[in-house]
Length: 494
Image (tube, rainbow, N blue to C red; front, side):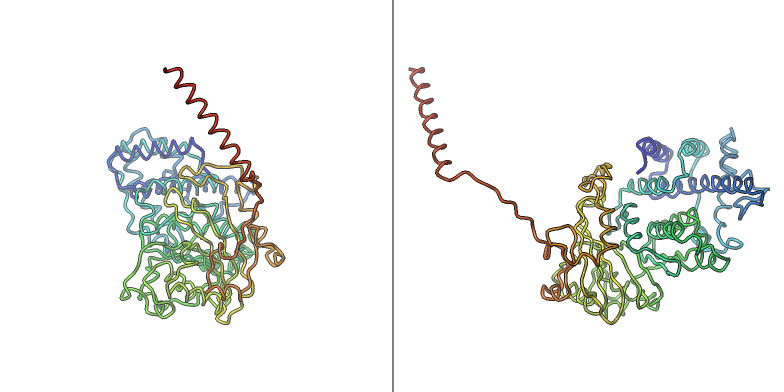
């Protein structure tokens, strides 16, 4: 989590934008992101230069050439004249970042940036914001990611249409549970700012860096073919593309696409891993939704349509870990039951992590779960692994204060990962514990209800009470005492 100092700095910058004439929260984030991106590019170039100095080799893939030093943050921030700074950034630096990525700027990033606009209205506001941003550290990946989350959390419209920002520690847990490998083709069909894709890239870089950069062909596959993200919000696509580029993925397939529409119904069987937190709320007209999804499950509810979409997009043998509202697990409609039956009977339902309702605060208090399954088209479900997450390391109120991460009662995440990785050994675990296995036949008997409460057994504690006769005797004694007190009060008044 970012510190209180950085939060205060962001708040001050946010207020500067508002007082400077930009009142649209999404526009504030977009303009601030451009400037943070420019700042980070300079820091990355500095790292490359230091490495070249140590090794004695030329700078590897330089961001700025020898004629572009005036475009670097460390140089233009020293300009004393606000007017000159404004002219340089608006006419030179901003056009420069719009063409980054890939060969000759021909990348999905450049495509999304084509319509980007630099809208900071005055030189004075730009100079003020540059000075304020200059003090914010961008080296740490977690800080950078949390900074984005904090900015996105300031959007007043966040949470509308079920679009909640997924906390980074939840994303990280899900990615570690799925353990992507270099051969995966990874997709988030509702990618937003690309949080899942970035976490997957970080996991691959940490655990398989030697393989993804083994040779030029492996590096090209990693940068061009591994990551796929869809969204229909052009601003989010720009932010997501910048985010991916900053994390070292040069040309991911981030596309402007309404995943549920008929226009993209031809995309199927392409991905080996789906990581997603699709929109929860809302419904679509049958006419605007892909017909093949309606054939899988006849519904207007977006959360069910997205599950049908995941099954369509996955290759046979492909895996998915997706966040769903708790209602998906026990909803009584025909569509709810049929979709759950399909996951259990026609594919392989691997596990369910039930999350507490506070995970998405302050956006919403909705209860959610992580649904993990494998597309097989031939069944395969044997035992389904359930985990009852009770704490995620932060308070479950709107404040979301950090708790003691080393205490299990405050943070279940490491326990979830350990038990998931060893779930085959959980056969004898009692239903009174936080995790356990449930046989497919039992789930079928309960009409494919997947809520953990249907299978978890409550721990009964023996409580000793006083005998009724003793309680009555105490009541009589109290009554006698009250009568005596009333009599004494009457005598005093007489």
